[in-house]
Image (cartoon, rainbow, N blue to C red; front, side):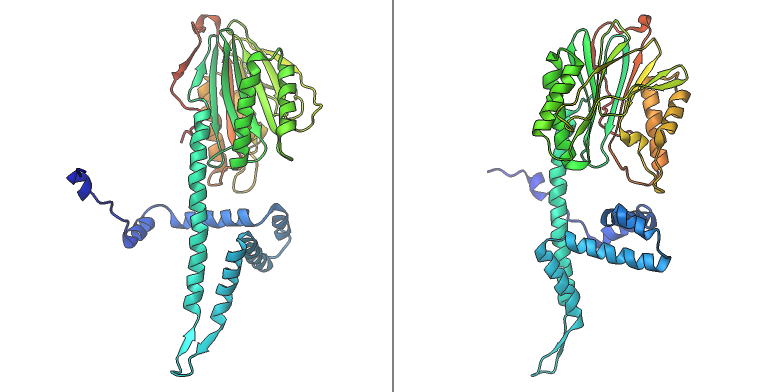
Length: 391
């Protein structure tokens, strides 16, 4: 076997501990990062009920309770073996042992430290394995989502979705049903993370299988609900807004299954459509109906997930509907993309350093004037992937 001398001589250089520490010190705001990590620990280990209790306590008692509750929660999140190792590591420093023959005094601090390092190594190993699996899941999820905004005669369309974590439970998709119909969907599976992402894939697959042959959107909703009730999990459900549009009409046919009502923007007036039927997977006998809205040239239809209005800042305040309505009124002369980016910028500015609390998704449609009607359906011309966050 021939060995390329260049490849043979090129040896991967291992990172040096000292250089890595210096780089860590020189990069970023360490105080800010530490404060953010402490907030994450607090939010992860202390539930909402305990946070309410803490508000009623004085500072000293509150600090004491926070430490106790965090340690207790951490303890019970460990595996049984690691819990036992942690108990041993905490007890050992309290003991010493004298060797009778030599009179040497043995302290168990080093053993305790080694056990803590072992627990840390095991937890880090689990985290890295989970991260690798989630990264694979993220790639699969991104491959299932559309890579381009669709173009469709008579309409301007902008789609966007971004998960709160590495993978999410929001669905943004479009289906070219035929030359005269385009279907667009925004769905939201209850919860976040990998479980929600798996159910999102099921929601997408079910919609793609049923929508082309459904006789009506009411029938489509009933069929999808029956499947989710049959195959779903307790406390897991999905809301969905599914739209169908055609080139020569401003009519938008809408199925709303448990989602926030879409918004229309006409000139400087924002209106909320009627609420829809229950979410998919809640009750087997739910009845669904089709809504119809007529858009004139220059009118917008906006569908959004609760990751917009329920975005929270570090003070636990919500972004809210009124902020969204104000943005839409001010941006009513823009394009779908400019309105979408203004919403995203406002949400990101509002939450500041806080971590996103939920997946964020948007679908924005604008009815074009007849003279600006695009000549044919084309879904390959817009190079802005809706699944990537615009920083």
